[in-house]
Image (cartoon, rainbow, N blue to C red; front, top):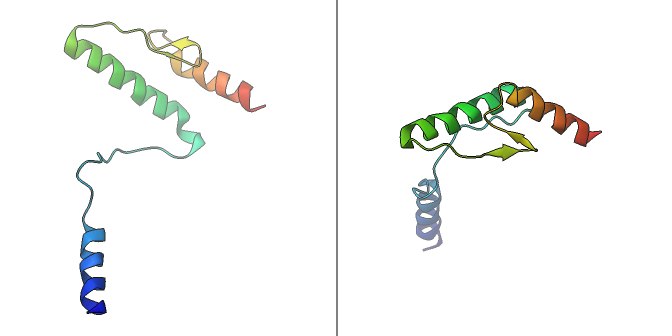
Length: 81
């Protein structure tokens, strides 16, 4: 009986949760520039799709500024000191 329960539990654990969307996340700090570039393109694509201009501010920097990524990374580096 224990073996059957263990097998059933293993099958249940192996199935992925369909309610959770799997996204690609960059975990290294080296890739902050690439992360914020992707984030900016994602937000701008969403705005273009719905024809709406939002005001998204991260670390006090608005996403529509031309050097958004560099400013955010500089703010993060200043805070970590």
